[in-house]
Image 1 (tube, rainbow, N blue to C red):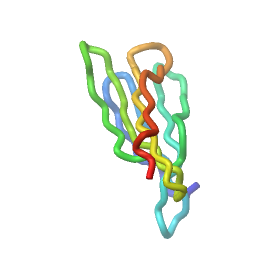
Image 2: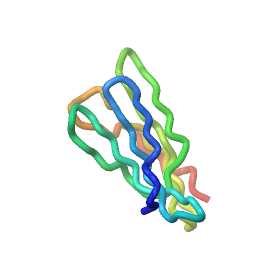
Image 3: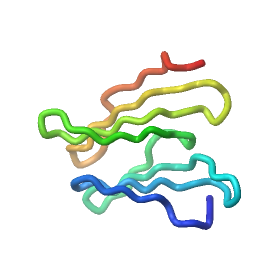
Image 4: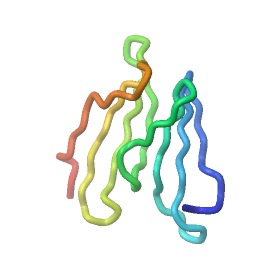
Length: 96
């Protein structure tokens, strides 16, 4: 992992920490969510497009996972309104 601190975003009760790999050429790294004092690692290393949104007062997170060069792409959506993140959608039809 990079020696620089992770990028941090807070929305409501959720803090997202996005780590980077390498110092000179930044590449995707693991993403960790902190919810109510507990840490949860999201799927994948090469993820981008993280988007927080609400549906009927329930906080969600959507993002695209890339396979770090293999051509696979998966769109994930998590419901963050519970004690633990719950994956509610995954679509790999975006793959190259």
